[in-house]
Length: 497
Ligand code: FAD
Ligand code: SF4
Image 1 (cartoon, rainbow, N blue to C red):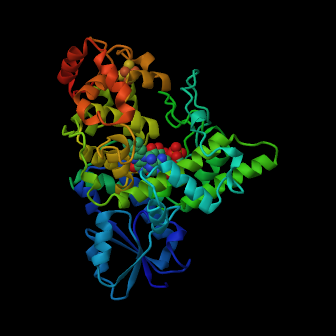
Image 2 (spheres, rainbow, N blue to C red):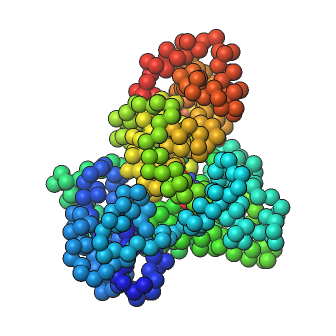
Image 3 (cartoon, rainbow, N blue to C red):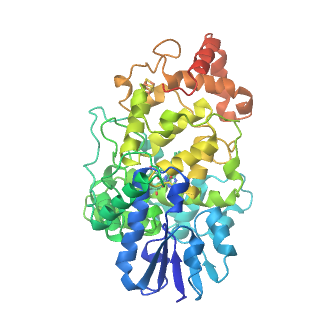
């Protein structure tokens, strides 16, 4: 349609318009940042992206800087259209707003109808990501060789669990970084002013801006990834290095979540690169290419669809009855308060950049919260505010389902709880830590190792029905010092370890 298109701040790419010259409405609401405490760089990124889009569109776009959406919308007599926004609350809002036509969502690989058809498929019991991913690859013909997966295997994850490189060096070169411009300068001045007058408050360090805010920057980051990083993406995908926080990750999630890139175009670009390299006699390892494509058309889409599929109450699930508040040192990203090398390192990276990769999120931050019984709703909110790529739709399933097992296993078959041995294998943190990953009792007992056993003991009955937890729960009975470990960890609680 040619009606004026209202674009939310996460709908900034060309694929959210029907025609390149379609009139546009953009709304910048300061109130969003006043209500909750965001990472400073997240506020910067969103405002900078919105203002860059307005500048790019020039006369074609109206940018309203207001307190509430209604204030801007009330100024229009003409009909407006909007692509379905990404959260329950914003969808409710646009649907009840007269004169606004709500179109299907964009910015994901599979449509809601395609997901629904797959989910309703006959005889399907669990909604497994792996099945959904294969269905999408077949449907879209991605990495296929006729009816078979390219290379004969759907899944090469077993090749992608290498421990941290022993030399402590990243497998990939330093990523490309964007340069700030006068719009960033203006954003920084505004944020400083709002902070100074007390209307907003942030956590985390200020700049330099590390993530794309325009389509052009996003395409440059994508090209840099495809050329220099994709080939080594896989093997160390799960590894963490204290001094190499980017590893071979794409750093594309903020740009994709802002809508600057369409995930399917990224998938096609990765496949095209792989096929071109193979034709040139310099093939990229399939485990890396498949591993990356799986993240985007598998995991990202699956998380999006489950957000809607499990319904609006999914976010309140708390199957393990975890009720502890997020501790102050965590809320403040105070890495200096923490001795545990892994947790302190990850918190410091997060304070600096508003981003860490998947494994620090899941196995350091999430694992800590799970073991210590922190309220999953509070954790969802904390992740959402603190990460530059955090949005409601992506946080609920990742935190409530995947990381905190608060849905009782609808999403992940077992809790992602692990002791220090896992972190020791996958990182170089333990060598720098005052704790010992092998010890569960005493002064130098690793908070993750001891925390793991205390977690199992606390949830013994709740997890008893889970087949995959049988062996770990049996392990509990062999620990003669278990009561002492439980007592020690109860005393430690959520105090900075
Ligand atoms: P890469 O490792 O290069 O992966 C490529 C792309 O795959 C990412 O850019 C992302 O778009 C997609 N992807 C992979 N896994 C997921 C997933 N589980 N959910 C959604 N997209 C995925 N991702 C977010 O985009 N926003 C979040 O707020 C977010 N919160 C998370 C919270 C927890 C507790 C966990 C365990 C994961 C979370 N993730 C989130 C998923 C994942 O950690 C990030 O997408 C990834 O680390 C982003 O860095 P990257 O672009 O370099 O990713
Ligand atoms: Fe983390 Fe424990 Fe290793 Fe220290 S010993 S770095 S706390 S896993």
